[in-house]
Amino acid sequence: AIVMEKPMALSLAEAREVSTLASEAGVQLIVSHQHKYGAHWRHVKELIDRGELGEIRTIHLTSKGWMAQYATHLIDYGLWLAGSPDILWATGHASGWNLLEPSHPSPNYFWGQLALANDVRLLIECGPSAPDQPGYRQPKTFSLDFWMNAGATVVGTKGEANVVVGRGWSAVTSQSGVIGSNDVAFDGVNDTVGLYKELANTLLAGSDTHSCRAVVALRGYEALVAICRSTVNRQTVPLPLSDSSEAIGQLQAILNPAN
Image (cartoon, rainbow, N blue to C red; front, side, top):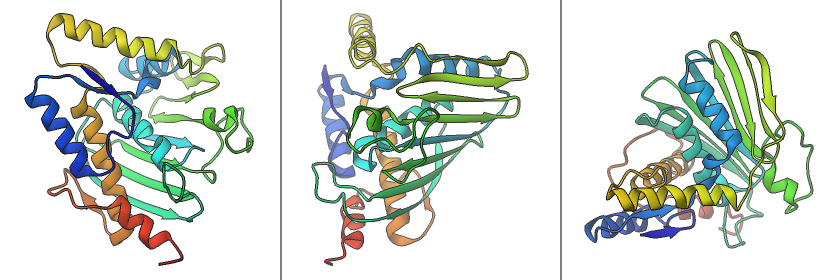
């Protein structure tokens, strides 16, 4: 097995090639989207799965961390919370160029919407201009609070739930009223241990069902590329994508004032 960091590649063509090569070689390829092993994310997922939030309408995912740092995390967790339906189409917007130079080049602000086959909409916002999560107020850039200022708000017909990477979870439902806990937060060690425990179990069972397997991560990466294409072309982009043409680099090019 191979466990790799996110994003899984620098282009959709690379991501598809890596996924195909691993599959043909019989190697489990795992992308480290480990946040969903945290207890606070699991609590919200359980509320959704047992129907306590009713019919899910929207999942709003945000991060102060920018697109290349956080977007595939957010898309992965949004699809997981929504029950992993097909993605029908994507649309997006981006602005700003100050963050194009670091190791994870990104627009200052990135917004995307994904329409899912089960009528759920995922809304994704990344970058310093994204909204603060509850308990945070414009933390200093690059501080620990800056990176922990991320999460998801799930809105259903019978309730609403919020999970914050660095500050626990909360919910209001017609069944349970106000519930939640600030005692759980992202744990870089234990949450990653959960990922490796699942990998050990799938290897021992000879199965390819890991929650972070390449085919799952590839869907999220493809969705990110579709949002970037929408931003560049100013059109709604249907999924799955029929080709692997570049989009993230084109987005960087149109945002850079030097071009």
